[in-house]
Image (tube, rainbow, N blue to C red; front, side, top):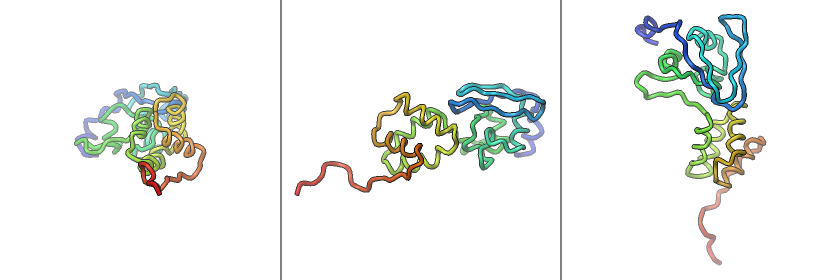
Length: 173
């Protein structure tokens, strides 16, 4: 956070948060005595002060489990707020990583099974991300049998075993 950002940051403006998962997520307001529900894949408008209060309290739905914005359930659709929280940089070199339905579908474009297995372990961490993966598989939005089988094994909690054989036709004897 630089000094200019802190001086011009408007705490009374409202920002939109988007639930990146397909399951409803609940949280308790810090600024008032109320609960909030954000349905799966929907949005909610909040004052910046509430978003910052949730971040200060370490709510993993807002800041992720390491407080770096990764694996957060809610994506804050205001770049200035994301920069203020340290999830992104002003120059655009660092952007907040979100795992929504499109990100899960894009994982299936991985070049090989080893890369795909690494993506599964690194990107699908929270219950909401796992449910999003289940929904993508159930909707038939991907078409890669070996990767679908690996994703199902991952969701069952099995160890991911990547075959070591080379691709192509087997050599004749």
